[in-house]
Image 1 (cartoon, rainbow, N blue to C red):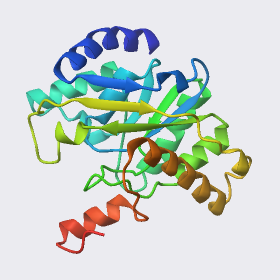
Image 2 (image 1 turned 90 degrees about the horizontal axis):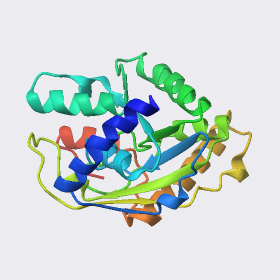
Image 3 (image 1 turned 90 degrees about the vertical axis):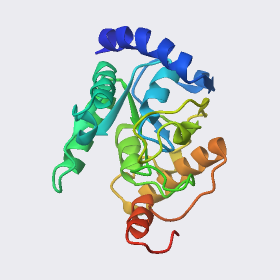
Length: 232
């Protein structure tokens, strides 16, 4: 995987930086070896590309299976980039995605690789930072690997929902110091420690991104918006 990733990144990274100037900060916070979780805010479908370009190590993401649809030229191009960078697809049908995603995530971390995750679970509907899902803390506390917060900026203007052709824009990627999860060590099986640890990670992301934090799940707000209800 690493050699294929390296070959793909050799082509993808310069091309990406040429089209979308990327300002990466804090890459020294990324440990050079060992299992690692990168926990990032989520503004656009194209976010994994910029994290992959900015991170000094290969990063694995779990992408929804729909992203691997090759129905159009743009989709085929995006699919080939995702696969070339070693991304994993997951079946999001009820009863399929959760267990498959957890199994794949654990496998990545146990092999000493870097796993990228968007704890909000879906793109922010309005640019604010929403409540994180506790599967993130379960992974971190179960494996004991460090969690590095990541803040993306500018990607929401490149490929916003409903847009088919990406626009040009500068992008920022900031890596922060690993989050101290020692207060919850060995407590992955308990709901409250998972919630508290996840909140600590989300706070670290917010400090990097400057986003306003919302104590609700993004998916719930999106559902309300689709039904014409209140935003938050």
